[in-house]
Amino acid sequence: MINFNGKIFKDDDLFLNHTNRALKYGDALFETIKVVNSKIFFLEDHYFRLMASMRILRMKIPDNFTMEFFENEMLTTIQSNHKENLAVRVRFTVFRDAKGYYLPHSNNISYIVETDTIDAPFYLLNEKKHEIELYKDYFINSGLLSTLKTNNRIINVIAGIYANENDYDNCLLLNENKNVVEAVNGNIFVISGKTIITPPLTEGCINGILRKQLLNIIDKTNEYTIEERAISPFELQKADELFITNVIKGIQPVTKFRKKQYSNEVGKDLLKKLNVAARLI
Figure 1 (cartoon, rainbow, N blue to C red):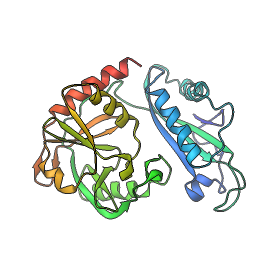
Figure 2: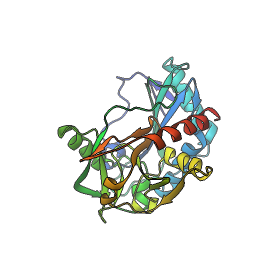
Figure 3: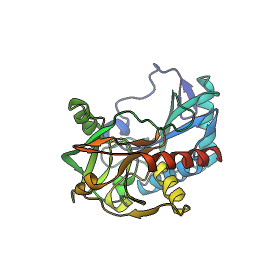
Figure 4: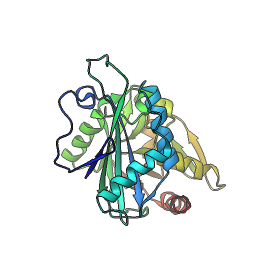
């Protein structure tokens, strides 16, 4: 069952048409949210990121689009799918709902809420092989728009296809300065000793919710030092660890990049701290 503007439809019901601006122009934003037993992980962060992104894209935010409304629409959709007591991945998509070409006739919005069941209620460390490579055919532009979760993710799509065709588990994306920005499906962290490095938002990486949580966790500990700075591909083979983060999987350790093999001790430690933070929500 899918929630479209507050009405519940069956998965195979037709409720969109060829004029949809998300389809025609990628004029849409989305949030991917983890919900366990009807408990929404990092609700405030998701809501405020969506609101900020809508303002940047000049979308009109309805007066009733409060955090309580945002929460209720997700829980209503979960209940309609009888998943109240399961671990669920929610995709909340907002698109500009107007006719027009590049210039829309209005900035009004519509929304769609979808749910999928996932296996793990909390974050688990996946220690299976996770080999990566650089994707160099196309580049992410550094700047504010690249940090938003818009529907314009074509580089991520073709980089994922490239990884699959060449038997890699993931690819790292570069910006126009040839610096490492992120992975196909999340932010990247590089560990050298007790120093943890991740690209700043000015490099064009997605403004990830898990990225924000880990920055807060690391900032509060005396065990590690965090640096937000540009990362050269040459640094990857000198690092002790690499891991990728997103709100569904948590922390995914990288096991191999070219001839370099990585450990996962820091990632394992931070995952414990992340689960503590998630339980305190």
